[in-house]
View 1 (cartoon, one colour):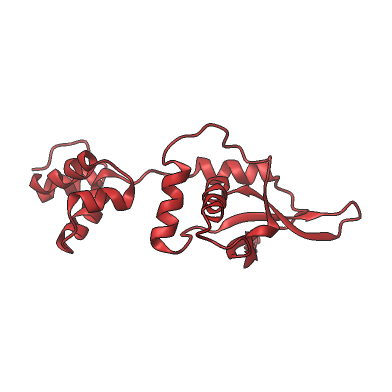
View 2 (cartoon, rainbow, N blue to C red):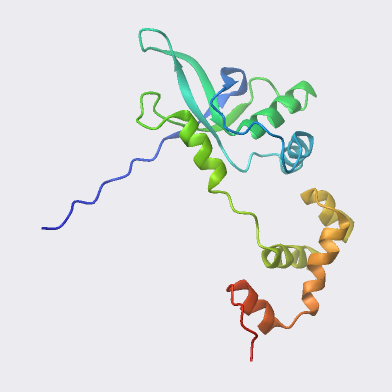
Length: 183
């Protein structure tokens, strides 16, 4: 007898004014690592958009009724970057923020969701960075401009662009994860 396939219901998304959001204490990220909040805020401002929605849960009253406020257990760095833009008066405190709204009474805890968002992240492979940087060079962006856009050093941009000198067959083998030398 065949097993029934479980249907997945994704959480709905909607825009929520920033002043209706609060940072959750359930966020598992405690140590600052990677791009700074200031740099992330600059990236959001440069793009004039948030590339990833915040993940939020409605805050409930004791009787289970929604308060109209939402906690952010996943997306704390993005929340802090938006908060910084508001403090700098570059974003209105009532600006609509794209959010994924989860069910407050779900089986999975906010901590689990926060952990999943952070654990399943994979850094961009250097060859993918090379291809993206190379495309920007072809669009006549300087190494300094590329570095500034992505908050990396000019040295990183130069290092990635040096991959252009590597044989395309070698790059292809490396991108597949092959450890053997190409023929």
